[in-house]
Structure formats: structure tokens, C-alpha cells
Image 1: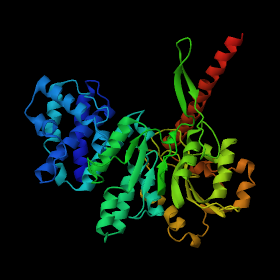
Image 2: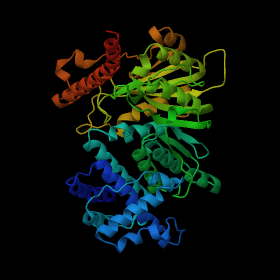
Image 3: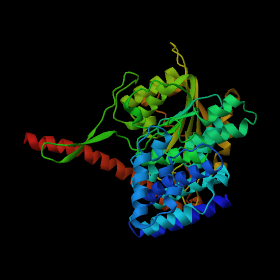
Image 4: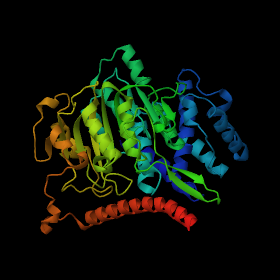
Length: 494
């Protein structure tokens, strides 16, 4: 990781220079995405592999130009390469030059990107370097990165218990920068040293399918896959830049690993008759859904069920509201418990996401064929939240913190599970008898409420208070937006 850290530091330090010109961290990452790809494509060509980028728009074509001529040619490259439907087109989709100073663009090309032989670096170093930049971006910005950055420790534990295999097709309908794909790929390679040629081809191209609604994020995902040697630039893109909830894609998968987008409501901004912009909630109506709702996470949960083959398995990060919300939420939980084997729920601690104020869980379930009797017999809860205190900087969640959960889960041997202090099972009849079939269950005593001598450090307490306040503020903001529409209607009546 030291090599990756050196590269990250080198590239990141230059970002601070570009910040003086008003370039955001996200914009800087975009430009790195374009330039890193061009450099690596040229290195592959020099190794005797097929040419990927047309000669007039490749890396060498940048090296003999300066000033405004360089800037104009860089813009022409972005426009040309963004006009295809393959993975190369996803990398350069709607690409624009954000570096306004040609001299700084030249330095980035010739000194920073050009000075490394990227293809000679170990794939893990290249991947870690890029993910290191993503992590810095998420940590150093208040908006943007938090929407797609799932803690790597959590991703690793989820993949370890799900045990992806080389012949599977794996989907993430909210794939962000591809964290679940990379972890699943690494797991398969590590646990299957003797892959046959067909399996090797499949895990390099065909194993993964993802959806990402944000162009820039999809771009980062495509580049992240390429840096890890997954897919090739000329491949049909496995990443669909689209709203995953728009429709049933018709494809079915062996495994779904995903962190559904945070934020409860799906909405669209419209301009009313007075020329004012308003947000209106969007209720997603699909024949394959059990209930129609504007709650984005509830819709993603239903969408994941649709994506699974019969006997397919899913691990989905969901916020607390999915566990207890009434109305459509209750309908969806009852149908999920009946039609799928919902076998495990991991209650996550606070303080682990860049999106502040999030209280989340991981729901594990298998899709089953139609049945008159419910498939869920018992649901095992692992409580990693009560009396656990994490913060992003001073006490971040580490993979070792999830070791006990992985051991209790008993991957591949779920029938041999045993209850522990943090791991309890609840029968189907007990669950559906609860008010609204709520899965919001705790049993451990919160020591901080009773034992003032063993309180966490003041900084941790303060961070948790801030998270709770920000979560409450987000709820109030959403409510205020809904009430604005009501207020307009009342004024019109008056």
C-alpha cells in the first residue's frame, strides 16, 4: 500500500494547486480519469497489444503540444472518445475540460501522469491508488462523495459472507464507483486459484452488471474497473448510466450486492405556472413491485428482489426507516418475509458513512419460488450498533470489527448458527406479529444510558450528537419541501 500512498499523495498535492483556480476535488478526479486512461492505453499499445484509442486522439498526440493548442486538442479528444457506446464511451461520457490554465494541464500530463509507468504497477497498487483518491475526495468534501462511498471494511465483510463464485452473474443497481464489484472480483480470484479459461474470461468480462444514475460517478466506476483489469475499454459497457428504478431490465442475477442511495423520497423538479421551481414526489409504479411508494429505499428493496434469479441471494444496505415504516413499508416487509428467505440482518453502528446522520443495516435474503407458506422461518439479527462507537477520522470502522459478525454468520453453514450476546434469532410468527411487522429490534442494554463512568470520549459523543441533529435536519428539510406544496394550494384556495 506504500506505493499506492505515494502515488495518491503525489496526485493529491497537485489537486491543491488546481483548487486555487476553482477546480473542485470531483472535477480533478474527472480529469485524472481521462488522462490515466489515455496513458494506460498507450502503455498497452507499447507492450504489443491492440490499439484502443485512435492514433490522432491518443496519449502521444498530447505530448508535442503546448498552451492553447494543447488545450484545444485535449477538448477534441474528450469530444471524440465520448461519442461511443462501449466502456470507453462511459469513461468519456459528456466529458469536458475543467482545467482552465493550459500550463497546469501540461504539467499534469507530462510531469504527473506521464512520469509513471501505470501498466507496470501491480493491479492492487493501481486500484488502491485510485480508491485512495476517492476516499480523500469523500473525506474532504461535504457533498458529492458521500452518496456513493461505502466503507471498504463493510464491503469486505459483506462479500466474505456472500461468497461470490466464478460462474455467477453479479449485479449492483446502485454501483457508485464499483466497490462491491472490486471486492467480489478479489474474493473470487483469491478463493479460486485454478480457474479454467472460460471462467477467467467470464470474471474479466460478463461477471458484473451495474446501474449508476450520476454521469461522473459512472465514469469513476468504469475507470476503477479498468484499473483493476476488469473489462476492456472496447467492451460493451457493464455499467448502465440510468435510473435503475425506471423499469424491470429483464435480466436476472445470481447475486445482488448494493448500498441503496440515501435520501427517502424520489422527486422531480418542475417549473410551475408562475415560473417557480418546485419539487414533487415521484411514486414509482411497476407491475413487479408489491407496493407503490415514493420512498427510494423501499423501491430499491423491491427492485433487488426483481433482479434476483430464483435461489439468487442479496445483501442490501438499507436505512432504519425500511425496517419500521408503515403503509407500503409494512406491505413490502410482509411480502419479502413470505416470498424470500430473509435470514440475516446486520445492524450497523453510526459514524461509519460520509453521509452524516445515517442509521443503516444490511439485509441478507434469498429469492425463492412461489409458495403458499412463508419461506422465512427465522431471521437472525446481529447488533453491531448498541454500545459501539465509531467516527470517520479518530475511530473508523475496520474489517476486524466485523470478524465476529462473519464468524456468527457461518458462511456456507448457516444451519450451524448459535446465539450469542449480539446475535439473536426471531421466528417468523414473532416477526409478523409485531406492530407493522417492524424489524427494528434491539435487545442489548445501552450502557451509556445507565453507566456514566463508562461513557465514550467527548469527541465521539459530540460526533454522535451531530449525526443525530443532521438526520433530524434532513427529515425537517424534506417535510418543509412537502409543506411548501401544500402552502401553495392553500394560498390559491384563499
